[in-house]
Amino acid sequence: MGIARASIRLGHFGREDIESVDAEAVVDTGANDMIIPALVAEQLRLGPLRPRTVRLAAGRRATVPCVGPLRVESMGRDCVAAALVMGDTVLLGAIALQAMDMIVHPATHRLLPNPESPDMASSRA
Image (cartoon, rainbow, N blue to C red; front, side, top):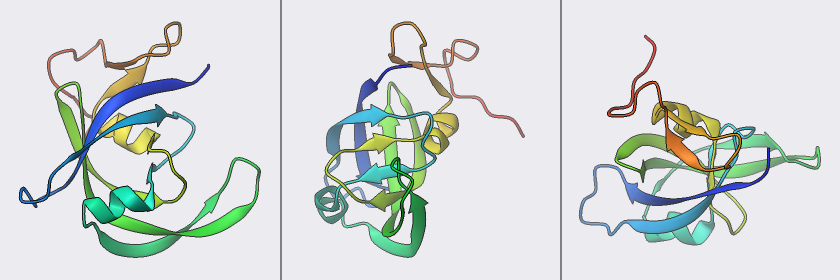
């Protein structure tokens, strides 16, 4: 499919006194979780959650810190998510994409609101 990138804003949900961070994120529909660098977790003063075991792209397993509550915003849509702390790149995974009802256009590799619900995120219940 190719690599998609998107401009997103990250914040500490419930803490308006902590300044949000703008980031250029890699969008990966094959990854479940949000991933943020340690510097972003520190800037947003996110609290620790239980560590998570992840399978890395190379097949190796690793235990990594997890933090939250992370507010993710893009194109007028938002969600609250946990984030794995690793690497030096922000990664937007499938859970946040689904929560914001967004898709990656297969031809242009651009992040877009779901065309079936262009005005407001929708969900199945």
